[in-house]
Length: 338
Length: 198
Image 1 (cartoon, one colour):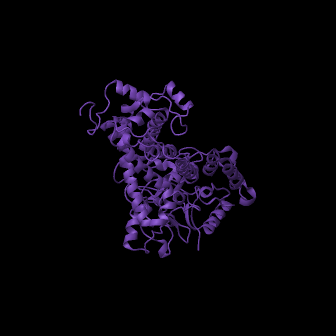
Image 2 (cartoon, helix red, strand yellow):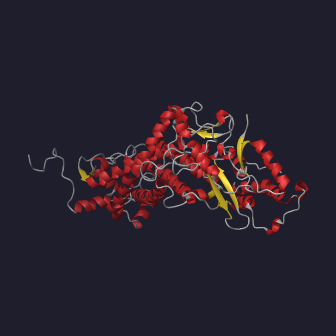
Image 3 (cartoon, chains in turn blue, yellow):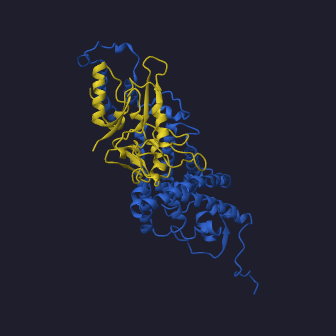
């Protein structure tokens, strides 16, 4: 595409530039020895356009960004924003939603084998849960306000009208800018809290080979987090880091970088974000409607013992061995108490 | 209707910056915002040229194409304008614009941008012509009074031309033929996908 544009520029521009400089029939004045001169302004434009480069010079106003005269890369960024991002984002998000609907229809909800036991075990403590929900709630708002910037004008704008849409987008922008900070803080805490249980090891390979989790029906041995959960963890941490770094470049415009850096930051920020949104849709699915007993881990923090044994047998054994199993419910009577 | 364009004859521009000053004064553009600027390339070397640059009012404008809130519109004179009441100051138009035309006042938190400001071709905004509200937001609307943009009108060397594209291209063509050389219509290829055939 870019080669095509450049070829077109070459075809259109080259003869014209030549004419303006050297055509003696038109001018009737002595020909300028242009081949002796350094490139003049217009030739510079053509050369830079062919090289895809910026034309920049000197400026007398304080804003040095303004010294860039022409930046053809804007066209590539426009193509990225309007075509590439829209397609990648659309396919990733809608595709994932479609897959999840098909999954639910074909496989149904993953049940607790043997039903709920009535006894629970603590899976996440208060700090872990609070941090999870800080990250989750800010992520959802960041995701919606971000998707709005790319898709809102096509979907929401025709529905609510320009004034209301601007109000929504303006608040979305403020929310996006401010919530970036708790989101990043949450990621750092998440890394500190869970990294020790998320180091990949040989058991993860076995887990994947045996088809654990959503895809297969087997229940390979699993520690506190299985390979799928470790994947979610590292996608969140590494993807989140990429999004955070590029996001801070964007929220402090031109403070760290120039126009090319801003464009690149936006490209990385938006592509990683839409892919993370797709992954998080799957995470939300399996943590809520997709699996019986899973949501308790992040709401009350207490999961059913049968659920825990089914999905995280090695972790349960370790916890029970440590004698830290949760108290039985009040209704349960000790043996021989009657 | 006319197809309004700017044309900068770099052989004539003497980098006096009067266009920049006139624009700021005419529209009372705030401190830090430059709707027009003069860039000197090959500074101090043979082949030095100065180019006065502002919004070129592109055909198929990139700013309008990427705006998340669709606040841009093109007038019957092919002038690209925007509605500041709809702009959210996201900065996307600056990333897409080949000429660095969009400007943002620094307001609010971090480096966050206020509502975008750019050259209006002295054609104001979406409000009724030459009312107070239009002047405050966009500056004066000379086009509605039958006048051309002030930067070009007061250019002492007539390096900067504004008006119907065919008329100003013809003026430039005659100049180039008369003097035997020209350095091209700056930005025309990028903005209008054409150049002035001599």
